[in-house]
Image (cartoon, rainbow, N blue to C red; front, side):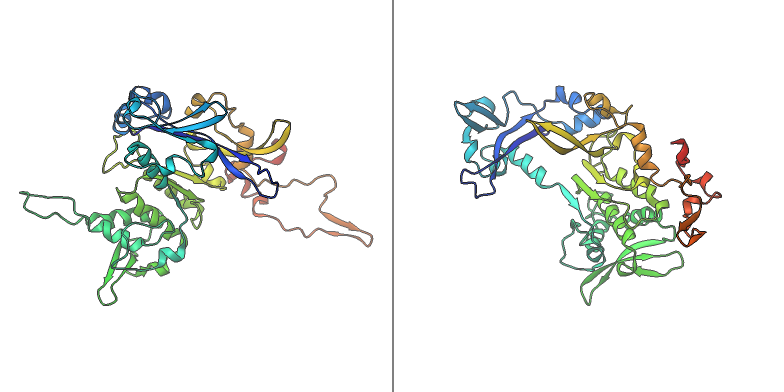
Length: 405
């Protein structure tokens, strides 16, 4: 079963002694399947039917894989066997559980629960560190990019030497995938134009692999000479080229180190990194999802409008207690509104304030351009900002005089 929904409910339990800080208690845990016939209703974003059929596999006639039931005063969490109702479930008292049931599942009891756990464990938060990206790799280094960007050279070298399979009469052992360097260079050229090629230098004497970028004038630059933004872009390029990179990828502030004019190139790379829902999944279209967060108006302005989710702090009241909690909203006229009509969409005014955070300061009645004190008056020396220049204001994106807001 490849389409599952996992949910848990936790509570904070205060210990009786009052000295302890308390602990978390598992109130509810569920792992349920979604059959192919119901998949369309649970995938509200635009997608091709062929893609959905390639993703959603398996049917189940029985109940949940993990369920929670109230038996008298006790909450019982049950782990059901993959065979459905034929096997007796394992029942566990929720109050005494130190961890979730799915975290202790095994292949003998529930292979599906085990695979669901492994899928969640594969989710990656990329924290690409320039120091790790710049390091050369020994010949024995892993061929998968680390979450900090380590093994960049070894990963690209591995991709460049992948065998595509038998060719010709079938007696060949395969051919070297030499286009990996070309694809990486073409992608990097979208960020910086002065790129002629990319390769990984193999130093037999020191047994080291070093990433090199060649400029159009023939100069070779190794990873130590590249900027932080270029290295992060290259790391994402390697992930995009690797068909074995699948699952969920999370990235904070992808615009770091990127010139504002090159942000569209970074966003296009992230879009290409995610699965194409118009095509079935396969070697050239791995099942990948990408989630990024950002504080940059330049990024927010250029992402697809149905991909934008805005997090806000809102005040709530529950059980007579007032507190602040995160809420998530999106733009009107997108599939997200249709999927969750109970959520009020993001007002246009709030988005415009975010897209245009800097506005011209117009003088007030008290601000006449002079500083007044007991000794008299003198001309104010407050510096003029770039955005205050009259020759630039008509060309600034989203510019509106403050009086018209």
